[in-house]
Length: 209
Image 1 (cartoon, rainbow, N blue to C red):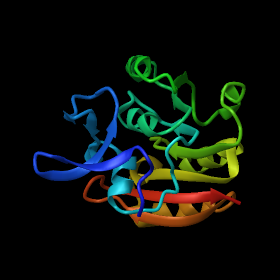
Image 2 (cartoon, rainbow, N blue to C red; image 1 turned 180 degrees about the vertical axis):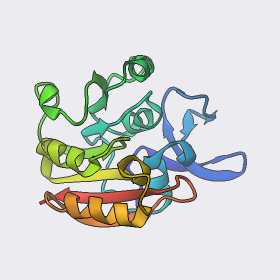
Image 3 (tube, rainbow, N blue to C red; image 1 turned 30 degrees about the horizontal axis):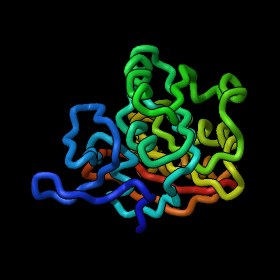
Image 4 (cartoon, rainbow, N blue to C red; image 1 turned 90 degrees about the horizontal axis):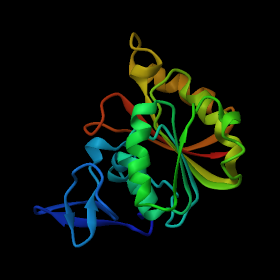
């Protein structure tokens, strides 16, 4: 599994971990300009740690759905090109705006990822990647409705949260249903459970059909 240009494995306290170069955001250690990327606080970081071939590359144009206060999307913006960060909750967006001050390629959007029509006039088409980390029912529907922004050979890299879909069902059953729905618009290339970094989460890499 190759990491995108701009993401490296570096040594922090004798531990070999992911890192990107940029201004620190959430109190993470920095060594020689490299920020430790904590996979326990980042589903995308965990996806890299689990060895999935995300297809992400340095300089990619990215739509990040579920940016929250910017922990993961700050690392994405460190290695990517234009990075559109969608978050619907006003409080985290205030933090996200602070993160964006040091990253000219990061564009925070106070929008609902379930309603891409509200930001379609801002986000460019033909993007290289969608990274999704939303805590809502209908996670596959979010991915499908935002598919319009992806290039034909683009990548969807998502973390499916079983408990956000249905807390009463077994996660494996939930994942199966979400993947079935996702296949309405995507070819699923690879999946992997994200334990021990994140319980009841499934990493998904897909490409638009």
